[in-house]
Length: 196
Length: 323
Image (cartoon, rainbow over all chains, first blue to last red; front, top):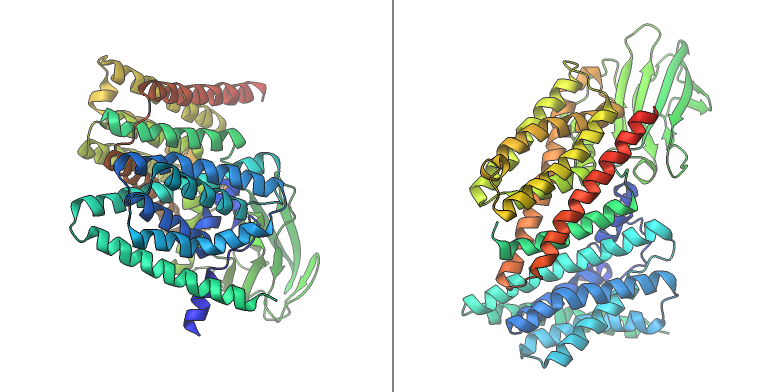
């Protein structure tokens, strides 16, 4: 039962921009939305772990690519009705990113960039706030983008340091990836079983 | 800070500036005032005073069970107004609400409720447990600094100015001590400073720090580069007046004044420390990944900070002149 409750926390909820006390403004509402939704938070952490496993030049790319993809996605998700495939991609991202972390292989730059951008875009779309406009929307989108930048930068640097400085670093990160992949598999199975 | 690691400050600056662009007067802390005036024994008149940029209605009050509320009348009978009072939707609409209770044969009571602490237990003495004061005022202080883009930009400018970790600790400590002094002095009524000139001077302090950062980068001699804690202390006194303005707007219960002041300041410090630690963590991350931006962008970011500070200064000065 307890595990099911944890799994329920992974379900991404539509961004109403009122998840947390909105007195902190739309910028902070945007920052807190992905951070307080495990369905967004965990895959973002996986992006950081995956980037940390790549060589420095490629790892640095994620600092720019991921926030930009999230920015574009959140903006589009706020302006348009989110397509059904976005939910499926977001739900699958736990499994896909988790498995890529488990494999711990250096990826070709094009593949790595593609993976980062697709997931950034789809999670950005999932974070769209259709009830906002004007300055409120601008601040909200910037908030989500800032959260993406902060999380991915910290995680990429930490995991990269772990991999390059500790002999057990790669093993630890692969273990983390296996947990993410396992949770993703269970979550996806539940979702598919629940589908009509 | 090393030049290579400073590059991150440019990103942070851009985010803060963009946030500031959305609301130049983001320092507003909307407060609603609920006044309960006793007309006869146990019979109160209920009145809301509120203003909100978003035209939001005031929160919904829920009075103790034995009271009957039919706006604007509140009948609490012989027991009087005692027990639990809560305000629904408070955090969504307002930062805080001040509840003033004017009683016929007893001294008036003042309570401050927030989104994090939307209920209060009214007692005849009006004295609150410190936990309740902490739950109200720490979030208010935290909120004030996190919404205060001008304070954060100033702290960011200070971080840009300092040369090493020890100097950073001294500088941030000097800023903290200074703004705590003026915050306490104003709220305890020892000094009084008009709010609008203070806000204009705070904006000017951002522009001055930006100029000092540029001078330091060019290698020009300046006191602020050698002893940034001096500039931090001097302008910290000024920023304390700004914090005090917000605290005075919120209202301080006389019965709980020292604790309320202390916890508001604790909230401000927690927000400030969180911001500084977040910047340091990001600096470390960029250094670890050897991620650097073009050198020209650093100069552009400093100019942007100075421009925003100057713009705010002139806008606030203009506001001051038109009154």
